[in-house]
Length: 253
Image (cartoon, rainbow, N blue to C red; front, side, top):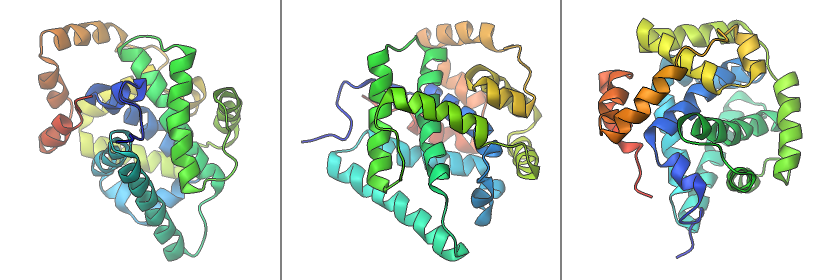
């Protein structure tokens, strides 16, 4: 049985833990709001109407790819590509290749950043492994202009961060939706996680407080995992209707 991601890959460890996965999408939520192509996320109206629902549906697709056999993973990737093609057809325009690359780059970067905040520093080999998995996803989707090595990705990622983001009225509205759906306390917690995992360019554009107030709390959270209290903590920081989805994020690797 051929797996899309090798059994003992660091990628399976990263994406098999709900806390790491939630940190990935906290970072992506910040950067999505700044992307020059964020209007595409508003076209169907689904993102601003239910940002948390979109988060969990996206996580489901990502985990389906990471933890599936090769054939099933390719089928899931093809389904994602078909969904985007449907949106393009409905709008009568094409999503720019650089916008597809940006989303892929987020998944690579925040996979690395989130794991390093919550667990340990990754080796260069492990980082290359993360890159390789998502490069294969992008290649299967037919995304043009992808970097073929981790080193090339680092250069292109820095360029994209510098030139493909803007704080627009979409940014302001999306953060209003985050606050509306999370409530004030959870929203403030989201922003603190974003301080921990986002690149400096993202923090600057969003005027995020550079002081990582949540950093001392991470040590306590790690202790809660050892005491098996972490599920209670995670369920406390997201609305009650998402408890089942949070539990489902933990995958046996």
